Length: 325
Image (cartoon, rainbow, N blue to C red; front, side, top):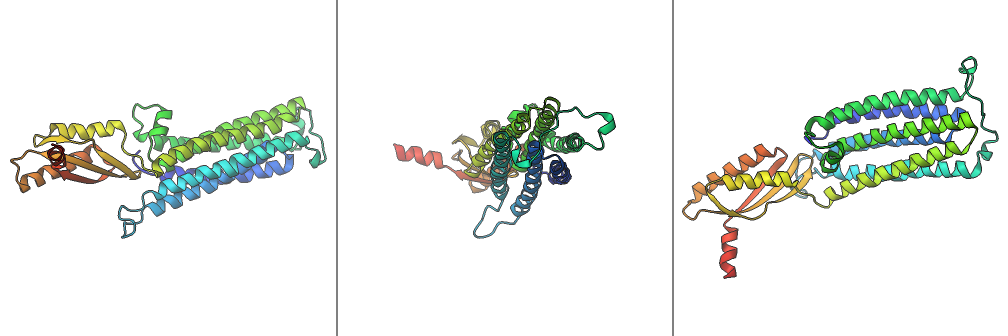
């Protein structure tokens, strides 16, 4: 992906802040476990957006003596923190709320759940109306935020499937917003169904089960996202199609007679290090080798804009072959 998009993150923060406030207000009126869980979910998403912005800002710090390759990995670290928070605060609390609601049957709240269907004459006086109103409004806000995030996400997706791009993407901040907003919409749908089933059937377990399902959803999302961040934190290189572009450049250069498989490493969404061992023609002098190296570096950077550092070691292969004999 081309880079970390602040536009998608700002949109998510604004939407989630308003949604969280609305959900907690509605939840306080109705004592709905699903609504409270969704409020916690939106509050966590708001904080996550702030952390992603912080990570992007930190990643832009210039290189120094202690970090000669810069601070690009800050984006991956804070994205991993976001994944942990989704798991612990989002999924964990929602799961706890749901299990407690199912086990205790709302006895601690001192009232039974009304079983009548909301009718038009009582709609403004029935607190459950606000559950539906807030959930539907939240789906509109969340859908708008997701639309903005998907527009940024799809800019470089090409012909890849949505899932494949999520797996391959190195821009974890934008991917995090897409994942969060998608999970949020699914969570809202679960909450809406569970609240409606509770009201219409009188079976109080539906509300608690809805909260449990939201918790499981968030835990699954966090585990997926944490795995993707972990791969980048411990050192992930270019995809195979990008490596093929590099080898094609080397194959076409008339001065290169042999080379080893390129080594690469991501230091951020737009910061990639490439190391090359190449064997040049023996008759080339220093100036010709320098010109060849410059030509190769320029071609690689044009083919893969994320590559910003290239180290080429000449004649390593030939010396190794000589030493082997």
